[in-house]
Image 1 (tube, rainbow, N blue to C red):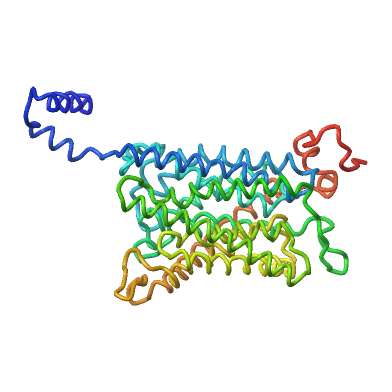
Image 2: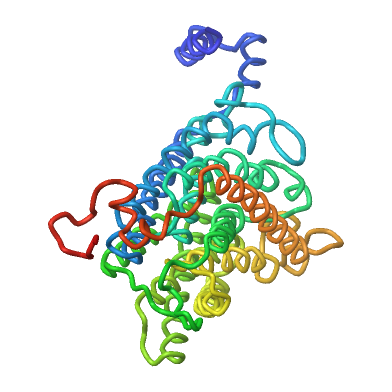
Length: 447
């Protein structure tokens, strides 16, 4: 009623019938959140782009796994976002951005009582919800081809409703890391690192897929069934990242925002390109062939690494960050193979290792943000910005891994986390869903 009365008063003011707002209206207007229409459209457009990353992940993970598990991995990508959206609306957003303490938010459940800052709260929730869904779907790739569907969904509930929002509150929600000056512009640690490290814990808990290693411990390749599908997924993800990083500016009106969005966009694409080139060059030198899957993961590694510093580094630094990320992902895949941690799609090196590297890169190449020093570099008090970045990314990684290790343990004891040997051999599509992704094609035997 107050808003409607104020709108009427504003109309009378504009028409010249009255010449000044009454005192009560001025006071109410000062308390009413100012919503910018262009900023709202920009944030929602970015949210739509980030949502489009969900089919990107689905295509990538389906293509890099075997045909007998394609429907299962697609179902996980479909349902983890669906569950994450509802839970993040009911409690996750409140835990992340509600008033509370330095550890967790404790108000604003189902967005009750929350107001938007520059954009309506519904737009803010939508943008943050697609980020939450991204963190969840990263895990499915690392644990692919041997995880029970229902068990995965239960673990996803815990990740998206509680664990991810707590990490978000520490950083973007004004919690203890935020107070220290920790900087993660679009989520190298908060989103990608969380998903990557949880995926690693899950892969370690499950153990390798049947046949991944020979009896004498030698590595065997369990090749993905559709490389074109996986490549399409990477292109979709690259495109969606133009919502992920530039959208995190959270505003588009004004010259400053326009310049920031343009710089972030350029840095994002340059880092992805550099990551692909570096990964191709290194894998070519190491194995004699330019492996396409490594090139694709190199691009994703560059995208993950630039996500934290994209707004505070130069384009030249973005290229360097991307080049290093491409090297990290190749060596990371090799390291996991040595450790016998079976990650079918390379999610851990891409998101976990490079999420940490990208966050640390803020303290090395960051040039403008809160705490800008006279030398043009970021500073976070006596501890130094680099130290804060290292502390923050390690703290988030440790919390995510320990918390989800407990979740996986409990889920395993209550309902089992891994499918049986017979189910794994026959394929999760038939056993878990009673269907095949490629009907009428003889892809494998079931006897």
